[in-house]
Image (cartoon, rainbow, N blue to C red; front, side, top):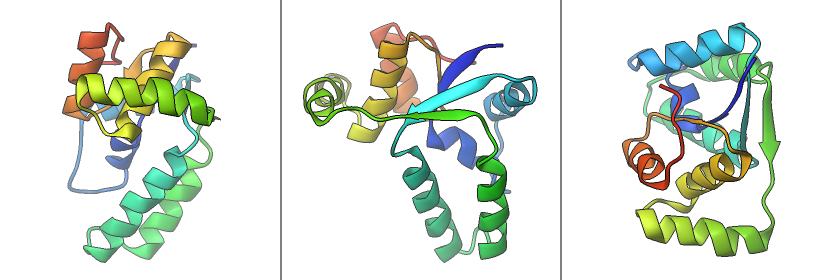
Length: 138
């Protein structure tokens, strides 16, 4: 069994019927095979926000959101909280260095400090991982 860092962009493809990705399918299979993941502590908030926006835009229904969150809550995803100082120092530095949002820089930072590959569909974050020497799940 392996571990990896997973970001919101990847898991959200499982909920929106108009999105699909071979990488997201691979991650779903990894979870089925007993692999586990880590994510920054804000990950559930980011997922819920995207789902609520999807509801407002009529991409998904409230019922679909509820079912998706129930399923998502069963996944073995360990949430990691960074100290304020860690965010202000390291996450900010990564954000500036690679032109990332603070949220995406937090995924990169978690992958770095955990020495785990990152599973993401975000192109800017993938590029930053390559530049930083952080492996991607592909």
